[in-house]
Length: 92
Image (cartoon, rainbow, N blue to C red; front, side, top):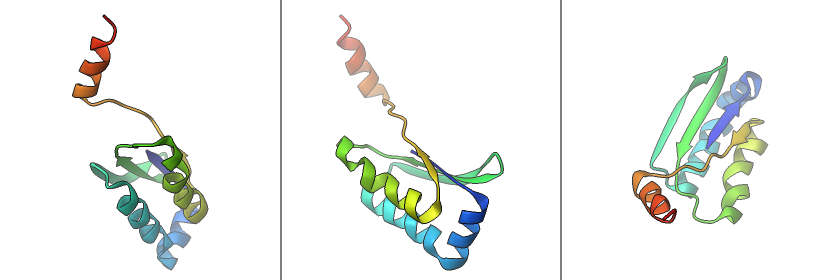
């Protein structure tokens, strides 16, 4: 998941403490493999790598960033090597 946080909303979230709290809320929920925080195109970015076990969890994962950080959020399904090998085996 990539959350793109606009500068002004991020500044407010940092000064009020809601941005770190939002990140902690999502991290606690998804128990990610990795979390990276940085910048891209002059805005804050949060990259969270986690296993989405059920698509019905998408609102619980994305809404905190939408509502608390005015963020845009992208989800991108990917596979690890074991998943890819299992998928490739289904081709034959």
